[in-house]
Amino acid sequence: MAPKEEKKVPTLKGQDAEDAVLQYMLNMNRPFGSTDVATNLHNSVPKTQVVKILASLAEKGALTMKPYGKVLIYVANQANMDTLGRDECDALEKEAKDLEERHKELSVDLKAAGSDLTRIKTAYTVEEMTQRTMECEEKVQRLQALLEPLRNGAPLLSEAELAKLDADVARWHKEWLNRRKVFNQFWGMITEAMPPQESNELREDLDIEGDSPEHVKLEKALNAKGGAKLVRKASRQRGAM
Image 1 (spheres, rainbow, N blue to C red):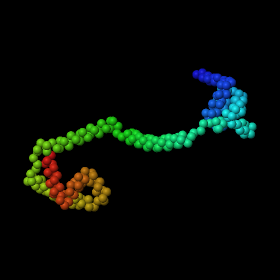
Image 2 (image 1 turned 135 degrees about the horizontal axis):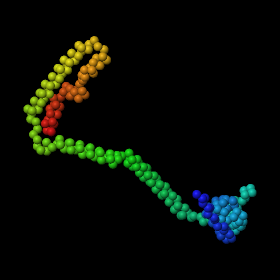
Image 3 (image 1 turned 90 degrees about the vertical axis):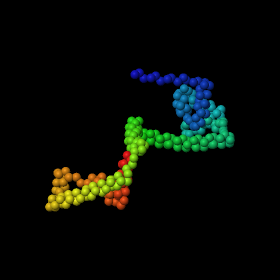
Image 4 (image 1 turned 90 degrees about the horizontal axis):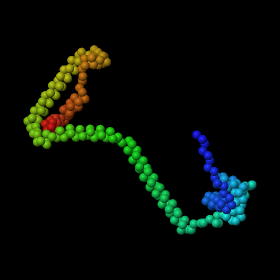
């Protein structure tokens, strides 16, 4: 690819050159040497001409010149610069304060928007929300199915039926405890001379399972004070379903 040709800057002469230099110095309003001015004007005014123009403008009072060693530094004559009145300064100061307050408000809004964006990015995707919605709908359907007998006026269990259920629970609970006691006695005689590890391995080989967490929980409920009422309450609820 051929290199782009640099755009040629037209050379200014005469009054155009002087106007360009003066306008630049007024716009920048800071000290410059002739070399800096020529460079910043992209050499549209040759350096030799810039030197003459700066000296001429200083003689006319448009610029102030001050030598630093062998270098001459020029700056716009501040006496010719427009100055703001007290009212204008107060207005600008108020505007600056208003802008500062607005900046603070926007910073708070930006922070809140950033937090919202982070929350949205970490939220469920559309697919996940669809899946969760389906799961919730299925759960609602299951619960509605449980309520359907009550809506249809299904009869509840009578006191006699509940009493029979309590008696059955008590009888089978007693049977469960007796059988567990017999097994523990029998197992103790068999494994009495075995180390605990060997006893456990034999238990696994024979596929003997102990009470499950559900059994333990049920036994605690039955043995607890008021356990019969819990059983009766559970039975009533099951009867209602």
